[in-house]
Structure formats: C-alpha cells, structure tokens
Image (cartoon, rainbow, N blue to C red; front, side, top):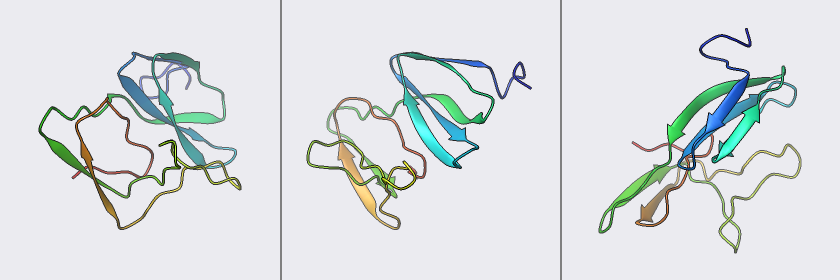
Length: 110
C-alpha cells in the first residue's frame, strides 16, 4: 500500500503547496505546508494534496467557509485536547490580497 499512487511513502511539497494528512491513531487531520519532505508513517493517510496554496490577486478577494479561529498573532488556534484546528462552522470570512495561504481541514472555498 505504501507504493500506491494515492498513498506514497514520501510526500514532497514545493514552497507553494500543502497537503492534508490523517493520523489514524488520533483521527485528526493536519495540514503540511511546503517546502517539506514528509516520510508518511504507517498510521498516516494522505487525504488531500499536494495542492497549490490559494493566491488572491491584487484588488480581488475570496470567501472562505468555515474559517479557522486565529489568535492575536494570526496563527490558527489548536484545540489542546485533540490537537485539531478550531473552526468557525457556519461562518464566512473574506480574505483580501496577501501572501498565499493553505486551506485547513474543514475550510471550503465555494
């Protein structure tokens, strides 16, 4: 199974790519952000990616459904009980031009 197309043992991410990895022991999906070379463990499954980060052009915007909760420094807050990012379910966030960003597990762009 480690050599199959959908579940490679090594995941290589360019500087503008990200991927979602499911930890089957804790049932938590986390995001990997490039540049990175990740050796997938036996209890991990790649569920999404590698995909290009979202880049919003100048004078444009995008709408993100179920955005992550961010702290004062702008980093995604993580639930201390299960190490999963916190989401604002049912909310929408408008993101303006800026550096490329990944979509965290649960976030959606219509």
